[in-house]
Image 1 (cartoon, helix red, strand yellow):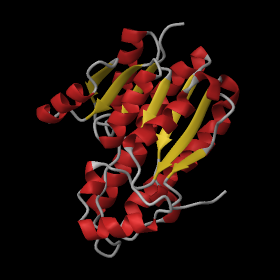
Image 2 (cartoon, helix red, strand yellow; image 1 turned 30 degrees about the vertical axis):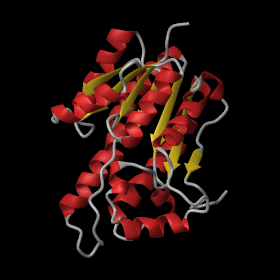
Image 3 (cartoon, one colour; image 1 turned 45 degrees about the vertical axis):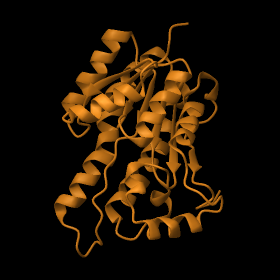
Image 4 (cartoon, one colour; image 1 turned 180 degrees about the vertical axis):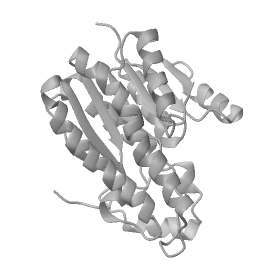
Amino acid sequence: MAKRVAVVSGGIGGLGTAICVALARMGCKVVAADLGGDAARVAAFESEVAGHDVAFAPLDVTDREACAALVDDVQQRHGSLDILVNAAGITRDATLRKMDGAQWDAVLAVNLDGVFNLTRPALVGMLARGFGRIVNISSVNGQTGQFGQANYAAAKAGMHGFTMSLAREVARKGVTVNSVSPGYCETAMVMAIPDGIRAGIVDQVPVGRLGKPEEIGRAVAFLAADDAGFITGANLPVNGGLFISF
């Protein structure tokens, strides 16, 4: 069987890169779609994924036409787009009283609109081929809320609502749709938190540490596998026990 082809939005970055590597190790051909304006950042990513079947493609997920064009290009180059991981995300934190419209709009545009923009064109081919795996990277803060993150939490909670609805629509077509909700992981964003505050966060995590990006990658690869076809509409928390529920 030919290699499965995967697209990972937000593919450059702590979690995105780990997801790309995990899928490549599973035997996939991976396209990491991310903003391409920072040449040094792209070069560092390419060095990190060297030896794996991972290629970079510039993409702004808020650009609906660009998302459709990327999907077309991937399918023309590789014959299919089998796995889509929506991992692109940003933060613009502020309490709601201090949050301006631009901060709200930017987070919703990337974190939620971007999921629609990329999933909609990718889904067409998946349905036609009778196979697809869509994994949306949500967040523990989409489940619990977080002080100063009304925009981010709303987008991440909305992402799972999207997941559950789409899962029902396409379940009989061989396409699964699931979410992964990471907790606090060893990414540049989390490690930039002042030491004292970060230590307080770790104290609240039952396993007593931050997550590793590779652990998120492993969860995504599990849901993206061919033999995960009976799991759909689910949210997989990977948070060290920070939030536990049914």
